[in-house]
Image (cartoon, rainbow, N blue to C red; front, side, top):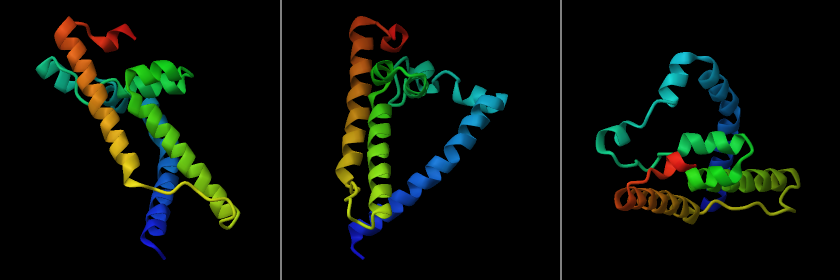
Length: 143
């Protein structure tokens, strides 16, 4: 078996684990007050420095996306929508590839997808902080 096929298998299995744990995580966060308070607490980095951390806006972005507001989600934290699209394309295409025994080719895992995601996180982090430092405007409070 080739290395890329082994990586596809590993990532595909991780997708299944993620999909199985997602409902449990969602129910736990929404139903257990101590977990809900932990997840939805203000950003410690922002409170300490007055600057956004690379993840600021991520939780609100996820909530916006699952509430049917993809544009708002994109504005709050573009990585969330990028991740959901990449995850969905990979998972669905790999499932179809397995069901059709390779007649339909699945999307292959490539490190470039990770680098693009890291680039999105870095650019949005810098952009939010530049707007904050130059105008004094908290971009996340406007959305």
